[in-house]
Each structure stands twice: as structure tokens, then as C-alpha cells.
Image (cartoon, rainbow, N blue to C red; front, side, top):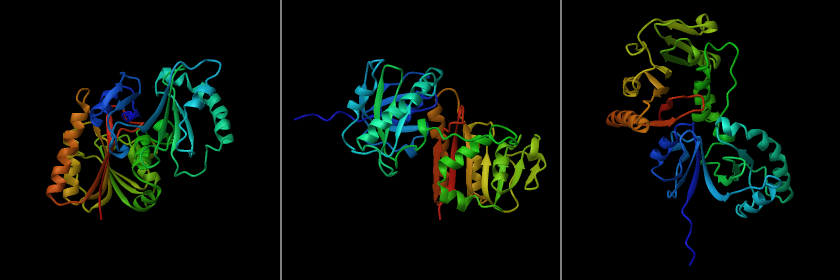
Length: 341
């Protein structure tokens, strides 16, 4: 009787957060090299991409192809692609999000059409987006991992990176964080329902105005709370009201549709603030960042979210709570908290 090999996963992450990926999955690390931008894990039959904070992508490893010949990488890679599933909705050739990995991107761009041509000729590629995707990950130019992704349990973006274009008039690059958060946390239906023009929002710690500007560009009326100044077009936009107040003390006169917060503070203090807004009925939804310490990042995040869950559960509030380290985040994670019903 043949023993089935243990499940192996490939996870992409922000370089430097490999150990955090391992810690939150509680799986056995096979490859977890600091600053490599990926980990290979074994032993967990099921992982939920939506519940993984530090994972950009979650892939099921099918084969490991080592010592690729420089003159013919195509033949061994085609031979390693599994017979099942018989078709894939897409082919992604991917590399680590590191300086070394980016040096391979020219090769993958040239190699992609050659491999696609062979797969199309054998009817392995389909336009059915419900089918799994085929990923070939090159940690270097001599080795590759053949993987598949479940469309319902992975990122649809190449390398798991949802790229956002910067508008010329945004006051700061933090504009990109909130734009990415909306794309990652909300599907198109939720965006159209929850980000309607005329809705109201409060931005705590708003200066210089990147998150405020993102909200105003979507047609929301924004109260920007910060003792510091707003910059650029955000300072004079008619839909933005700037209040020079302490973000931890401010409360609106009437409930708002959205609360956003990107203040540099201890994660527990920010988590407590957001929880108070929800328990007090001041907002329906929030997106906020938690700045994590250099050590024990997963523990700090888990403690902050645990405090929120305990307080909200005690009040009988039904909610949706999701956390993700976005591409435009650094030593932080972004959280969505939304009331259900």
C-alpha cells in the first residue's frame, strides 16, 4: 500500500515575515529562509487563505523540479505538470518579491508565451475562471515548484500582489494602502453597496491626507481628524472637513458609515479605540492599521484582535473581522471590521 505524501504548501509573503507565516499556520516549515519572500510548509491538510494575515498567496505544491537545464527548461517543466486537473484557468510564472527574484522576471516574461503555447496545444488552458490556476514558481534560475491554486482559497493576482496606480494629486503614498484594502477586503458588489457617493466617513490621524483623499475620490464626505495639516488638494476639497483634534478623543455627533485609522500607536491602543467606536454605535465599518513590534509580531496582532473579539462578543455584536498584510503595508497589518446585518 502506497503512503500518500504529506500536504505541502507554498506561501508568498513580504520579505522578512517568513517566520510570522510559519507561526500563524502552525505547520512544519520545510523552507523558511529569512527575507526570501516565501515559505514551504508541510503537514496541514487544510489552510484558509482568508484567515492568513501574512500570506500573499496560498498554493498547493504538486512537484519540485530541480537542476533545470539552461538550454531546455520547457521539457522537464511540461513533464512535471500533473495530469489532474486536466485544465487550468490561467498560467502564472512567478518569482520571489526580492531583488534577486526581480532579476528573473525578464526570463519569466520571455518564457511565459512558450509554455502557454504548449499548454494551449494540448487543451490544458480554459477560459473557465472557476478552474484551478497553474503556478510555476522559480526561487532561482535552476529550480521550480509546480503548484495549483484554488480560486476560492487564494489570491487572483500575479505573485499575490494587488497593484494599485498612484494618482498624481494624492497627498501621500498612504493613499495606496486604503485603495488596496478596499480591493482585497471587498468584492465588487460590496464596494458598490458600501462605498456610495454621499456616504460619510471619519479619518483618525488623517494628515497629510492620503486615506482621506481616497475616500473623497470615491464620493464620500470625510471628517479628517488630526492636529497636523492636510496637504495638496485634500486641504481645500469641498467634501473634506478638517478638524484639528486628538484622534483618540474625537467622537462624531452622529454615526458615520466608515471609520478609517492609520495612526502610529501601540496596536492594543488602536484596537481598543476602534472597539469603543463599534460598541458606542459610532460607525458601521472600519478599516485600520496596526503597527507591529519588530519582535513577536504575530503575538501582538493575536492579542490585539483577541481583545477586540472578546469585547464585541460580550456586547452581542455580530461582526466580520479580517486582517491582511497588504503589499503597500510595511511593519503593519490592515484590518477590516464590519457589522453583520
